[in-house]
Amino acid sequence: MDGPTDDDLGEDDGWQAPPRVVAKPGEFAPLHIGPLVVDPPVVLAPMAGITNAPFRQLCRSFSAGRCLYVSEMITARAFVEGNAKTLKLASFGPDETGRRSIQLYGTHEGALGEAARILVHEWGVEHIDMNFGCPVRKVTAAGGGSAIPLRPKLMARIVRAVVKGAAHVPVTIKFRKGIDDQLLTFLDAGRVGEQEGARSLALHARTAAQLYSGRADWNAITELKQAIHTIPVLGNGDIFEPWDALQMMRQTGCDGVVVGRGCLGRPWLFGDIVAAFDGKEPPPQPDLGAVKATMREHARLLCAFFGEHHGMTQLRKFTGWYLKGFPGAKRQLGALHMVKTMAEFEELLLPLSDHTPYPLASLRARRCKSGRAQDQVALPEGFLDARDDDICLADPMEMDGG
Image (cartoon, rainbow, N blue to C red; front, side):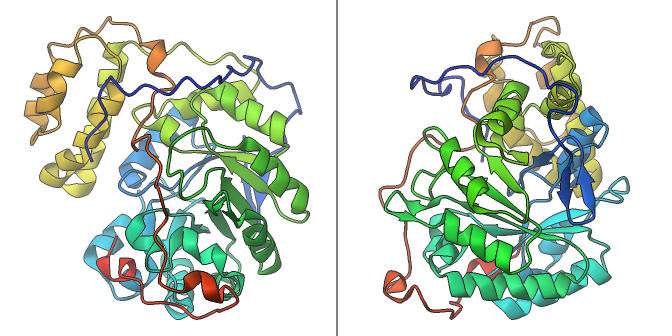
């Protein structure tokens, strides 16, 4: 997955910028997820292929570790069976103490419950998030991800198993509005989570059919918050600047925000958000010299974690996000997307002028995913005819590792 080009900036659909007003003293309460206290109430979204230990460390470095940083998704069965790739992705850096947070995926309660038990009692994990929002075709076609909330009894079994396996460690769930505008499941998903012992809920306010297109429907976050009374509700979708995070909480009444695509190529966004929640003006956006320094640090962390070959392969997709909108950067992207060594990487950065100011127009640029929606979300044959069923289906994702 290579970085995007400079031609796919965010769509202009009547969106109005939120007010640039920092938080007032006491305006926003800390987020309580069981025994975890997150202040300000900001969470890094789990993103496959993105939120590994090096990226989490980079985000923490800009925000004094004050947010909650969730790992990328791992599959429960592959973890229990000791898949090497999965075990690597599930690992934590030496600085991740007190808030080891991981997202768990699966459709079979046995594997999920056992994975939760191992993560808590053997790996020292302090927070487990569950993925009920993945819209990827091969996942929903097997009855996983965004498809699971279509069957509330199945979802309840799965959440119950993980809560039991996690024992004293808080379990949270993340989900979408539903399959499409005709099959909305977020209120049912929220109630299941609340009833089965989840300690908070996070709503990505798009449907599976939308993928990452259009605007997130923050009104759905308001509706979920009004329906849930005993645990926190977090909102996710379209947080690209600190003002978006503040506005989401002011507008919806949610208890916290989950930051996803907005931090891709901009890990300092967490520092900007922390400043705004602290009542301070965020610092100016970095010039190209500072961005290059961040890229070098990211490359160093990836190589230390994965080894140079795999680390540089991982870095490739980030290069377009870091350099998005900078004049002249586009000429370097082809080579950066094929970079193999740190030395080659350093050489490719040299022609880019350090003093180039940050292109503010790219702050809200589309990142990571295309802007296209799905015409139809793939579901197993007959899945909608038995929504009261609680039977797990075979899911190929659980055998792939990762």
